[in-house]
Amino acid sequence: MDAAAMKELGAALAIGLGTIGPGIGIGLIGSKAMEAMGRNPEAAGTVQTNMILAIAFAESMGIFALVIALLVKFV
Amino acid sequence: MESIQNFFKNLWERFKAWVEANPRRAAIWAGAIILLIISFILPVDQPHVSLAGEPILEDGPAWFTNSLLTTFIVDIILIVLALFATMGMKLIPSGWQNFMEAVIEYLYGLSETVAGQNVRKFFPWVATIFFFVILSNWSGLIPGVGSIGIYHSGGHGTEEPIEEGAEDHAQSLEQRLAMVDGNLMIAAPAAVDAAPAAAEEGEKYLVPLFRAPSADLNMTFGLALVVMVMVQVWGVRALGAGYFGKFFVWRGENGFMKGVNGFVGILELLSEFSRLIAFGFRLFGNIFAGEIMLATMAFLIAFLLPIPFYMLEIFVGFVQALVFMMLALVFWTVAMISHGHEEHDDHDHHVVDTHDPGMGPDTGVQGTVTG
Image (tube, rainbow over all chains, first blue to last red):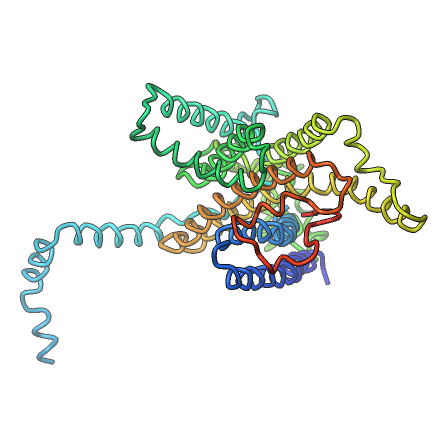
């Protein structure tokens, strides 16, 4: 396999495998947040704010994978 | 047959009646169709992706990049906005002052739930960070940023010669022949492949005049560095030199606990650096990837397709600014608490005024908060 094909494959694998973890993580965060809001509707605003924060943490892992994929493909 | 004939009968009159019935609707349709035609006649260039900000002037200083220019412009916009908000301040606000007060009040409330009683110290910093980051994120969406630019000549070494693949080696010989002998024209089929490679030497490529500052790793890393240095500063201010005891913990009942706590201390030290990198890359990755996505969508179909991605980018810009601000606030708050005891009290502030029986045993974060 020549270098060009490996490059494309590398970029695709980087982003493909890299978003499995964050996807599962964000789903877990969301489900727990929903649960918490259901148990205590008065604190829903607070829970939601912290949920967004936690989602940003988890999403940043996916963004790292995206940056590597872009680096491999375009640079 | 008859219905087709009926359709063409009086077509012009019916069209004129339709236009006169609602002229604005007709103008919108006309504009849309013209844009659709233009998007096919004038296609967008393939996105020229550059990881770093590029110097604008070809023979000018290397540090004067397009993202630096946009940073200056964002600074000026921020100062002008602040001046407008406070010019002739009234006790009962109206207009722009009213809007800014609403935004600041919202941010202050948000910071208060996180930072507790340290808000007064932190709020000017975090509000400035928020406004600066959100303006620099959104500045990448202004039409003209990224598309208006200067053409530079001279090869850019990052263009792939790799795309020629296996026959590269055989061709490069003829390529060199074409170079050395200035007017040697190679009529072989290899000329077709050699031409783009030879043209790279003097190829003109567009250097955008503006670029979103947060799409430049220098800016995001600079902000991250400022935040992490202030973590140490505020920790030392609050706790004195004992602040550094966080990293070298040698407490514990028996030898095993001492070892575990020591390991936790080292993890804390490492997490300072990992937070720095994560901070810098999170903002950069989001905005840079968004820019590339917008450019690619415009390159694919320039009509209507980029619109949902624009909305996504507006939302992402806002969320990333908010996240940067909240994370800075959280790190600064955590740095100021003394770590003699296990639980982190600021987490209890998050439940507003109800006693939540679901809180359970210590759910606070004991060790590292990486991300």
